[in-house]
Amino acid sequence: MFHDLNVPWGNAKELQRATSPVPNPLPFPTPSRLRILRRCNIFLTDAASNFRIPQLQQQYDLIAARPTDEKTLQQACQSLDVDIISLDLSQKFEKHFKFPMLGTAVSRGVKIELCYGQAVLSFDSTAKRNVISNATQLIRVTRGRGLIMSSEAKSVLGLRAPSDVMNLASVWGLGLERGKDALTKEARSVVEFARLKRQSYKGIVDIVYGGEKPPAPEKVVEDKPQKGQKKDQKRKAQDSGESTPAPSGEEKIISKRQMKKTKKAKLAAEMQIGTGSSA
Image 1 (cartoon, rainbow, N blue to C red):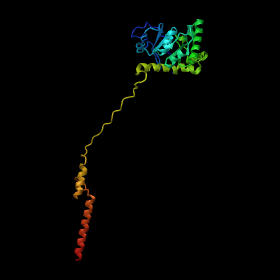
Image 2 (image 1 turned 90 degrees about the vertical axis):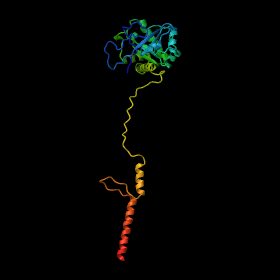
Image 3 (image 1 turned 180 degrees about the vertical axis):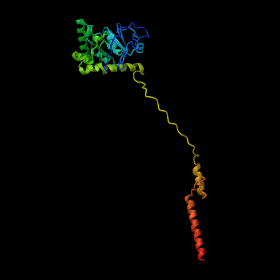
Image 4 (image 1 turned 60 degrees about the vertical axis):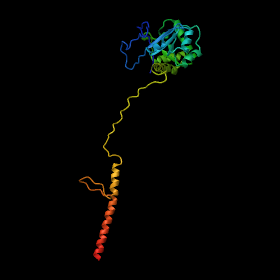
């Protein structure tokens, strides 16, 4: 899935406390397979300012920081709990980017955003030159890791197809494979990581709905004799030499012991009859 995580909202008003300028749902039809995320850009002008990031995380899906100087860039890379660091590549920075600073942000899971819209639509040759210079420098310093590519397009003309963006990334030195990851894998990871920070416990434990537990089957209780009652009755009948009485209309069940006694009695009677007749 391809992502574009920086599409400015044209009717955005001044951000107020506990409010969001982007309406939900949007006042225009959207495709069913299109996923709309809400993003807040924080412009860092003073490293000592309180940006109320925890409150903003409850209102937005993504929090992006845009540093304006080296101090605020260092603060965003090392300590700010943001999802994206988005730099204005059309401006010329006083100092070059450093790997230890940006590497700290990448190791924390913060992504560095490259916006290509100003290089496509801007009529200022100086701005285009700065975008190309800053983008190639960021790609070289970060070694192509932890980068995402977005449009920051303020109109439809500023958008480009994913294949065009990958070709542009290849021209800047990122390569086709890394460029595709910047639109798919890396962008998806920052979205999911931001969701875990909002919905899970400390970004580690998440509760996943696994469905309802099926009800246990009901047990059918049958009327059974008490334990040992039938065996005791059968044992007493065998000891007394009598068979257990059978229900009415059915043949009586004779035990083996009783059959042996009956057979012996018949043999003894036949022997007595035989001896009497011979006498």
